[in-house]
Image 1 (cartoon, each protein chain N blue to C red):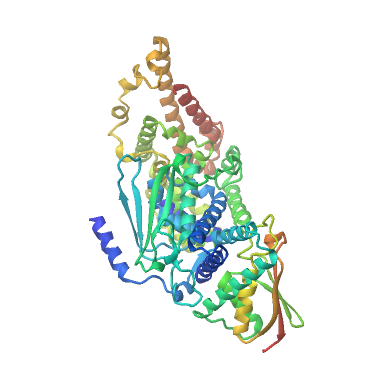
Image 2 (tube, chains in turn brown, orange):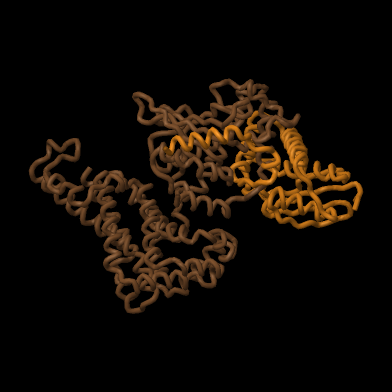
Length: 463
Length: 173
C-alpha cells in the first residue's frame, strides 16, 4: 500500500500530463506508420514493442529512486502491475486478476493477467483512421497493445536489473480487444537472464544516484543538528528547487492522506539508508540476518512503547505540526494535529516494516523470540557455513564463531541506531542540552553508516 | 474466497465494454513514456533511411489524423483566436503558452512542450511537428485558413523553448 501511495502521489507531480485520447491516438499513428514502412503487421508489432522497451528504459533511468523501492522478486514485482501501469500511464489500472500457472521444473510460475479495460485499444475500430489490422499479426507476437507490453516488460526488467536479480520477465499480449477478445490478457514467463531472448540493457553504475536528495548522506548530521527553522528552510528550498513548486502546492498533493504521509516517512527512512551501498538489502540476502533484523524491529516497537513516555510522544507530534506550519495548508495541519501521538509512532513503524519487507525481511516466518529463531547453540557452534567448512581447523572454526557473535552485535547496534534516529531528530531540535549529547556521535548518521559497513565487512569474512 | 470474489468482479467487468474514445478524451495520461517512444520511433525511421523531409511529412500526417480523432469527441471553444489557441494547448498538452502576433502570423512559445523535454542527439526533425499539424487541423476545422504551420525552434533540437508558428491567410474573428 505504501509504495502504491508513494508512486501515485509522486507520479502526479513528476509526470507531465496530457490528454489520454491524444496519447492513444499518437500511439495508433506510430503503429500505422510502422506498418506502412515495414509492410508487415507482425514486423511492425515487433518494432513497436522494441520502441516501448527503449522508451521505458530511458524513462526508468530517470526514476531509479522510485524503482528501487520495489521488491526483489519477479512475482512480487508483477504483483505491483498496477503501480508499474501507473508509472507508464499516470492513470489507474482498472479491475484485473493475476493468476499463477505453475510449471514443472522451473523456478517461477507463469503469470497471466486478465485486465478488464485497455486504454490503448479503447474505441479502436470506430474510425476509418483505425487501419492497423491486428488479425494479421502472428500469434507468437503481441497485438495492438504491443508497445504497452514493451513498456511494462522493460520497466519490470529494469527493476530486476537494479536489484541485481538473475531472472527476467518475458511478456506477451495473448488476448486483445482489437482482435475481438473481451479483455486484455498479458502472459508473463519468468526466465533466467541467460535464456532471455532479448538484449539485456545494463545500467551505468554512475546513474544510480542517491535517493531523492542530491545531498550526500554524510552531511545529514549537519542538517539534524540545526534548529528546527533551519530544517524547515532546507525542506522549503528542496521543494522549490527540485520540484519548481511552492510547498503549499506540493503538500496539497497529499491532502487527505496525512496518515499515509507518516508511513511514508518511516518507509523512506529505511530506503534512504539502504541507498548507501544497499546495506540493508545485502544484509538480508543472508536469511539469518534477515530474521535478526525482523526480531530487532519487533523488539524496537515494544521498547518504544515501554520507554518513551506519552509526553515525549506528544512532543514528537508537536514537532511535526510545527515543522509543517507555514508549509502546508491549514486543513492538513489540523488533520496532522488530530492524529493521536501513539498513532504517529505506529504509522511510522508500519512504513518501516513495509520497506524492510520489500528489502527481504519475512516477518510472517519469524518465531516468537530471537533466541529460539537463531538457535544460538547452532549459530555459535562449529556448524559449517562455507563450502570449505569441512577443511577448517579448530582455530578457524572458533574464529568464525567469534565473527558471528560480533556480527550479531553489530546488527543490533545498526538497527538500534536506525530506530532511535527519529528520536534524535526530534529531541535535538527541541532541546539544546540533548542536542549536545547526540552530536557527540553516539547516534549520528555517520555512526550508523560505520556499523552498516562493519556488518558488510563481517558478512564478507564469513563467506 | 478472495479468488471467487475477484473472479466475479472480472466476469462482471467483462460484460462491460472497454473504454470509449469519449471517455479517453475526458481523461489524462502521463506523457513521459510516450515522449520517449516518439523519439525512438524517429530514430527507427532514420535507421531505415527515411529522409528528414519524409519524416516531417509523416509527423504532419500523424498530427492531422490525431486532430480528426480528437474532434470527433470534443470541441475547442473561445471568443477569440487567441482564446482558442490557448484552450487547445492547455486542454490537450497542459501547456501554458505565450502568443505573439505579427500581422497574420502567430508565434506560440511553449517552454514546457510535452513532446520535447530533453535535447536529443542526432535529431534534425522536431518531435513537436506533430503538435503544429495537430493544431493546424483543428484551426482549419474551426474555420480558419492556415497557410502554413511549422516548428521554428525546439527543445529537442537544443533550443530553450519550442516555437510554433501559424500563418493565417485571414482572420475570421
